Amino acid sequence: MLKSLRYILFPFSVIYGSIVEIRNQLFDKKILRSAIFDFPLICVGNLAAGGTGKTPMVEYLVKMLGKKYIVATLSRGYKRKTKGFFIANEKTKASEIGDEPMQIHLKFPNITVAVAEERITGIPQVLNDKPETEIIILDDAFQHRQVNAGLNILLTDYNHLYTEDFLLPFGTLRDRKSSSKRAQIIVVTKCKNGLDENERKKIIDDIEPLPGQKVYFTKISYSNPYHLFSKKEIVLERSMDVYLVCGIANPKKITEVLRESILSFQIQQYKDHHDFHANDIKEIIEHFSEIKNSEKIILTTEKDAVKLLQFQNDLNDLPIYVLPMQHEFLFHEGEAFDKEIIMFINSFEKNSNELN
Image (tube, rainbow, N blue to C red; front, side):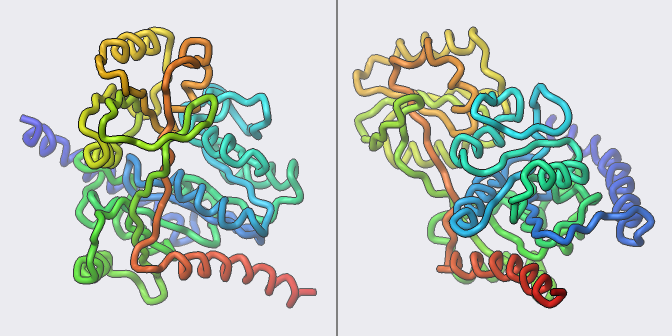
């Protein structure tokens, strides 16, 4: 039945693809203009709808670049309850900027985290309000062609490569596969442990990168969980019972970790970017109390954690922990990736010196 329904949707994918192609052609032929900023703009994006690890990649870049440069992030702020341009401050809530920008804001309170529906207006506003900014990282802006970022990092999920996908609504692609040629760097994310050189070469052959277009591979790595409020870390033990609460696009990787680490877990899954309400919290507490094992914890994701913080009065005394995740580069190529980023930034410094 589901398969038949998908094929019914195929004509709509053709229509959608035609619209996307016309739009791309208008930009490629410069009938529609892309703004170019004489400033280091790094875009992190994907072709598909759904999670490919964009936020952890933004965090990776912030952590790496923040040691030397003054960094800002700019995103749309998906599902926030505010409009227009907004810069996070110490009183900001997830509802004002969105869960993923809030996650970045809490982890990196010393950087500028801004949101704006239109990046083309958001970029000048960041530079006006925070003139000391040296780099802006655009989160999920690959399809936002009104801005021509100097460096585009395109992510694709190893388990759902864009080369094997189709346009919406038949598939999950928001843009044509050929748009991948606009990226300078392609990162295959969420790779399995033990990915070997033969499969690496096969995937690169499928991607068919342009000369000079770099392809990297990462896997998801998890650190020890920390308490939502006290921040105290624990180690997952096999004897534990885990009640996993998550509202993310695909919890597959987390459940794989739990199967490897513990004997028993349950999952309470909500839709992606779920807004938690009092009834949800009541339900979570009730279900958790029914678990008989005395060694039990509630586990959640960093993205969900920023929305659960508002329920401290209800959850503070419970063993509720957050599982942090990050990208880990395979084939010892993390240093090469970092150098690509630094070379891009240095090119602006070189151009500036030549003009002077």
